[in-house]
Image (cartoon, helix red, strand yellow):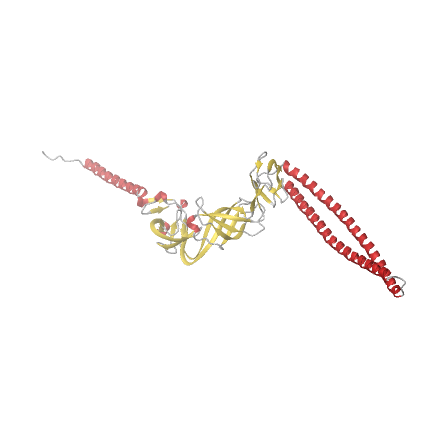
Length: 422
């Protein structure tokens, strides 16, 4: 078949079409490349405003542990029933501020009132008996003293008579028989005086013993009456100390036995902070470490305290750490008030550290994104951490001072080999 010669215009149109197809292909390739840069892992792009970037520093790292907690009273006690009875009234509610003499509840017990009346009667009888006994013994003593006086008079008269007759016997005016009879009478009366004196001395001792015994009985009955008064007074149950009522354990009409719980009162004078520290951080906490405590009150003041106790076991997912606080807490401080504490654990000298990335844990390894190309991109690096503080964490390997890393959540581009930062 003979060749057909194409005209110049046709050849021009074919050439133009061919160049257009080539340009369209190039444009499609460029668009595909841009799409790959955006969608493929190596080409992920993120906004700088959505990232939190922190530099790696070198120097002294203060290890701090932060934990929430509450104020707890150092002194608190259950007020219990000192006597059995039926609750007639409850005068306070949880949260009420009370003083030592504030009546928390009133109990009823008719037997105690009857016992008090009986004790008063017994004491009155004993006191009357003491008065009667003293009068009776005094009369007996007076009788003995009268007998002694009579005996002494007779003894003196007989002595004078013997003396007079002794001179008359020699002159034979008085017979010796009469003289001897007078002398025997004088001896009898002298002996009667001596015996009466002994009887009086013995009676005085006996009198003192009887009065002392009756005084002891009166004292015992007075003590018994005081005890009955105390028992009746105990029907009005008082707080016993100033503080705030935390719990009421009774209600009207309830029968209480001796020692039954009525209310729990906490002192407001001595409050400690109890922090709930995570078990992973509690290993470094020790008694004596300084603590800065922030109270959840209007002025949000910081108070400096000291660790006084670390619980030996985990409770409800945390370790309780008691912090002793100074007296004179600000207004608004009360039991169960929320607080936050920062415990100073230690200081690491001459080390590398960085702001704690999201999900970072002490003594662990984590993939972070380090900024490269002047901050225009980030690449993943394996970083090994050491000890951690509340805000910073020690860097053992993987980064050097001056490096900048993304410390915010990187889960949106986790696994990307390179991230562009817009």
